[in-house]
Length: 191
Length: 237
Image (cartoon, rainbow over all chains, first blue to last red; front, side, top):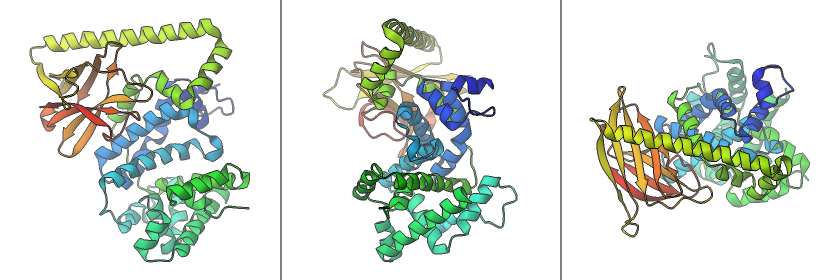
């Protein structure tokens, strides 16, 4: 068995240790396991924090804090509520949005800027397979569905705040969010 | 019956009250729990659509260094201190626990000694400069300290020494911050011994003149990305 899998008790795979095996290692106090989880997700975590905060220093602090929280709170992870990846990125998102809400930082950061950051589907030469899949899924949504999704996920707005901001009935906002998430789920996880 | 707001919870678009309502439903509905799990997994793939940007390499070493300063008590409190203690005692027996505690204590003493040794070396250095850390609140005049600053291998070494601190309980920590205008940069968590002496060593990649000062805050909820707790000490560079 691969030495790292043996160390983290992952008997299901002969390749890289799974995220769950790394989290098990972290629960047992393995700094190496946290290092491997960091190597796997630091770039995604930093990219997400930077997209929300638009400040490298603050994004670095959020990533630092998020991985310390993973270390402290590893025992609270519940696999029935999502993958390790989803749990970690939710910590990152929440920490970044806390800073935005406290300081009104990135208030001027508008959705069109983020839409551009989310990539032109025509220019995907250097993108990874996963990046292409997620971008295609995102850009397969209508502009209105994509907009509510971005406002909710990257700006941390509630459906009521989105409704006020877009001057759109509450019911329409909720339907669009629901439809957008279901479409993502279908395209990214079920197809 | 399926709850209509599960997708909104996954994307974080509900108010705290609405979140509570859906969470209570999830606790009793397996179908919605699975829907939530899949929705959250799908939504948290969204950052993959962004052009990836790697964090600076120093973040990794900062995290691994700060792990050593997080007490096991803080980790266990999250997992349920009582349940964890019972499980450990049941599985390993008293003797193993004692040995484990002893090893942790020896490691902590060794780390503390290394820091003290480093402090002496730094203080003896010709190029070292001592900046006083002064209490912000006059009701705690017993809390005081200093920051020893010295150039080292093209970088700047900071050694922070504080006395008169109460050892923090549970998740609470004393955290140090460099100040640059309105920005705060976390320097790390002070390691506090039983006598209330706190020590922290930090390697800065730039000259300390890039910063106006250094502050120490008491963070009751554990390490924070931005200061949230009470500022107790301040030093001006």
